[in-house]
Amino acid sequence: MRVTVAGAGMVGLTSAYRLAEAGHEVTVVAAAPPAETTSAVAGGVVYPPGRSPDERLVRWTAASLEVFRGHGAPGVRFRRGRILLPPGAPDPRWLAAVGDPVRDGDRVELTTAVIDTPVYLAWLLAGVRALGVRVEHRTLTTLSGLPADVVVNAAGLGAGPLADDASMVPVGGQVVHVTDPGVPGFVVDETGPGVTYVIPHGDHVVCGGTEEPGRDDTDPNPGVTADILRRCRELEPRLAGAEVLRSLVGLRPFRREVRLERVGDVVHCYGHGGAGITLSWGCAADVASLVG
Image (tube, rainbow, N blue to C red; front, side, top):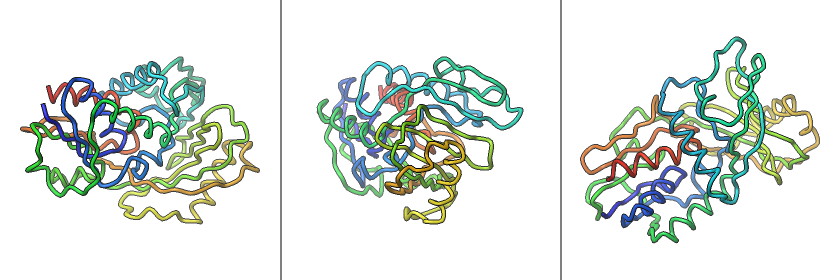
């Protein structure tokens, strides 16, 4: 079967990978290469949004972690870390999906995948091409008229307009990369109005972040950079003397819940917000099932 996948971020490429493995003739069409997608800016800790009521997220996360454990891809490491929960918060739904979780008061220690997303995306792109997937870079304005039996709409922020779905909104996220002084594990602080995180990748640490609904530009704000560094150095004092390498901004494709369904000859898979990496392989398996 001929399948066109709209989108070359984490969800689009992973869906293309699963579809090609299933024997379909797959073409990926995207406005930008993977290295220029929001996926490439992500911090890369694999666990689903803790406050979402969507039960599918746990299943998708568990499926993704199983794949990450098995394929030994570059940019993927399993690390121990901790998540700080709001005072008195119940156990997050995702506890069942991650490895060896231990809760001590409002702190959860766990083992999960930490993904250096630019490195991993490059491997994933090479993987889909090796499976015979064609990759085209052009902007789609409609899902109609494509030379395909089924179209998969996994175009991130572009998926909303392609589906005539006004419920999609961009949520800006700024991060700062600094040199890694030897941070032993990741830490995510969910106790504030936003989320602060420190995610080591060996040669650099991703420090974040922000949640800015409605943001439409990707120009880093120096004041925000300074605030992120302050928060992250308070969270992880080892970063006090770390050299700042760069600041980046991504626009997360947010929807109240992920849309994953087939309507006619279109399979919609979008609205993952900042959890595209976490949900990628689980969602790709469902996409492949819906394509048939």
